[in-house]
Length: 87
Image (cartoon, rainbow, N blue to C red; front, side):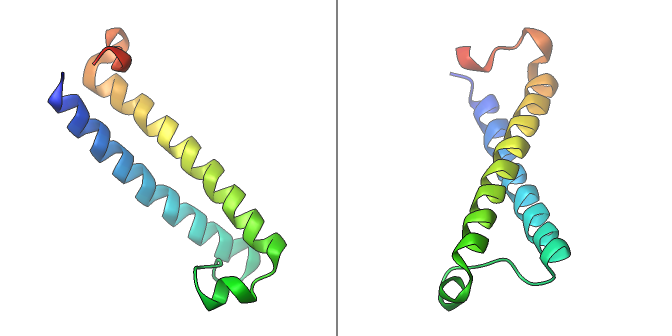
């Protein structure tokens, strides 16, 4: 069990989540001109298509950011010979 990899992995995922959140929120505001739908009354007032689109875009950006960040962390931590599945 490699504790240091788990710490690097956790920090990488936290950073990826923050970056993805900023990208989605700012991108949504840039494209649509208003804030993204949030939980609560705003979500109930937003159109269903808008909420579904925001959810799909958020998921895609988060998955892509996570995959990219973990790949870079893997390269930094152990290079090409490091296999994170064996940890």
